[in-house]
Length: 122
View 1: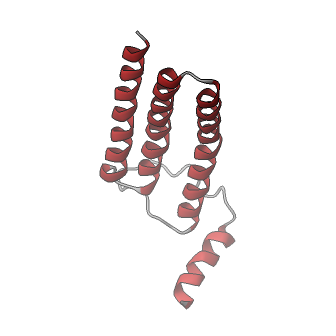
View 2: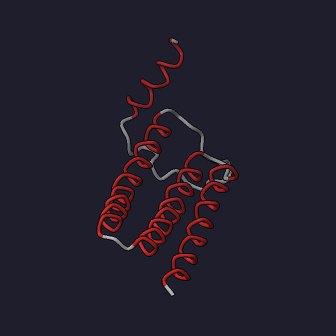
């Protein structure tokens, strides 16, 4: 029974990792690509780790899989936020069908202007 649960978790994890990769390739702008990669990728990796935990069910494997999953949960959103903020500061254009820019006017314009000045001087 455990092997069946592990196989289901592995197949689902592989599916979500595939969806994350597909989203990273097919979505129209960097912000949507990043969203797909972080959300579906973390879920897929978590399910693969769950499958490893079910199959190998030892204390060492359980500890390692839980630590790796905790690391993913803590670092993936932070990395996505930093990358998205850097892309926004750098002036990456939003998809043309984006209806609103919720960050417009929220950041200091001098930071955005400084990045544009750096582009013109180099």
